[in-house]
Image 1 (cartoon, each protein chain N blue to C red):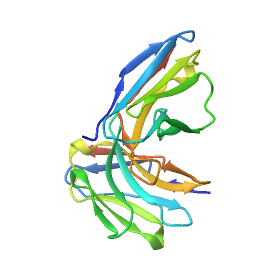
Image 2: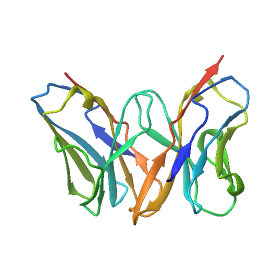
Image 3: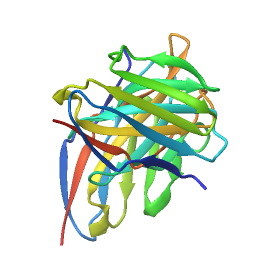
Length: 115
Length: 113
């Protein structure tokens, strides 16, 4: 069955430190890949997406993600975290299953930023 | 403009009430979605509309009734809800139902008393 795994439920980093959030998927073909961020009580904001082509994609707010086919991964990175980055981060996979296009979300990673 | 708007922001309703949630987008998107999100969980898909027609109903109880009056508007009618229906209800839209990114609204925080 298709699935998206975010192995880290919580991550804490100091402001200014680098960040990497992990995402692995299980799907036979290369799916469409997304990262979203959600602040408390808010909707989801699209950070970046991967459909095809260059495996390193740039997003908003200084985020980037790298698609690695061999590892079925799409990890999110940021070189220097700001306190405002504290939020919940969801990896999502867009794929066609049973003739229907759907999102499958990971369980999320909650990021805490220490001043 | 990549904005999806939702009203109201907060809603408290009793189990015998009837209320509606509203979602609007003006991006020309032809697919719209309702999701339910419980605390500390990812969004769960409820309904998908494509070109104003309901295309997916993820076995949602009939006390939730979606409606798509036109390509910009999506409603979710609520009736006889249960306390366990309390959640953040998110609306999203995408260019169409093919493999495109979805844009989410800020959500309606629903509390059923």
